[in-house]
Image 1 (cartoon, rainbow, N blue to C red):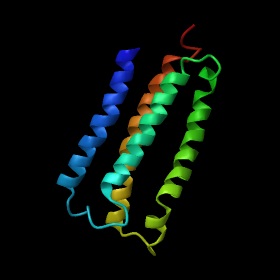
Image 2 (cartoon, rainbow, N blue to C red):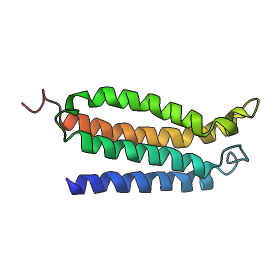
Image 3 (cartoon, rainbow, N blue to C red):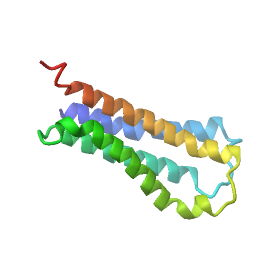
Length: 134
């Protein structure tokens, strides 16, 4: 139990950090001045995904929410979009348009953390699938 939680936590700290280091070192030509700094994007997406997976790790132990975790995850995706829009409204929408490199800078941390998040949520949902556990 604690071991699995520790693996989640370390994965959500180490992989985005590694992604940030690789992003800035391997793709320095696209790390251009943009309205949002790259580190802020990584911090936002990593912290939201970490909080989400910790919450789901806790909720999968409660009988009340065990069967609704898939629906709660869909709700959390909408919540993430709303919070991202609220936090980064000024920097994103103050420009007329984004360049391709600025769009790539936005997508790389988003995709990295979403893939990690979906993997762990998938593992949690399959671990407690009532059809498979009978």
